[in-house]
Length: 398
Image (cartoon, rainbow, N blue to C red; front, side, top):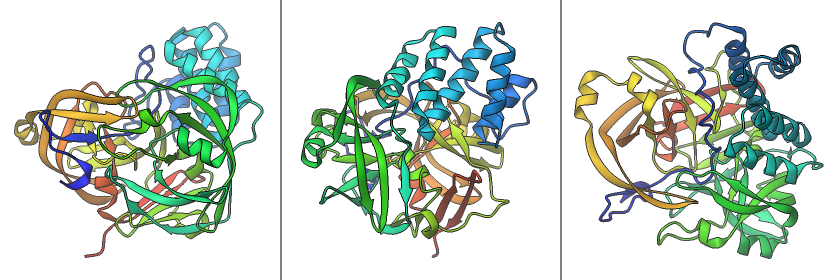
């Protein structure tokens, strides 16, 4: 069956993202970034930071300093935003302070996980990408795409996963390439269940003619990277490595990955990119409007979330039928029951894509959808500019 889905007594196995941000049950979801501008200083500052606007994080810091006795939910949201942003940028000591401050204001278990990771990485320099590259992408057995990455002379197919907020290496691969291990254990949220691992650093890796330095990796037991009876995932190149190139693009139906200056330039008036709670977000639209969605190239199947109902017509809602499915991730495989749309056409950053058997997963609250490989491979180009925070897309040539 296509997209790595397998028939079973539970229905199809949908292989969604391997590693995502821990959920934040104590904090309300942020308003959709493509909705009307929010009212109030707090909401406005959070939205500016979501869009990566220059000076937004500094403005949040000033607000925190001036509102030491402000509402706990507002202060927690501000610290959480800085915790996420600084961690992605590789400012680990600043991230540790922000994550710890958030936990002090509004304790929650997931904040402890962020703290543990930032503590393990403090003192390390940020991820650095040197050069540019255009490399072939190969379909893998789990329904997404891999590229050849070389570490210490060993070439292996690494998953290219914009939905992973940290790069990942299996224990057997870490032993082979001699990952430099750090102290302490960390827990990371996944689609299905939290997983425990250790942090390490790869000093240098190569992808095509480009080099990535100072790459933090989460080292997991091989069993946690083996989904059902599918092959073990050797390694995952996550969002921080991709963002370090400043520009990245999936080209020609996701058959090629372009990094750095080899990625197409994104027009200054292209749709805005944003920092999603789980990584990077893009606009999707139907005749009913535009909403933000998590871009996850490591997921084999796109799906709608609760807020995605706003993009559906009444006829589409009536067409949805209930299915049992298995969802697989680094935390294992779980059986779920939810509604499925037989077909849905959306525009992704302005380019049309048609999705089939689209699940609606009501318990997911962040954004309107998760966009996976099934959408990306319909495009001739999907380019992200992390400096300008813009995204462009073009249909696949017929």
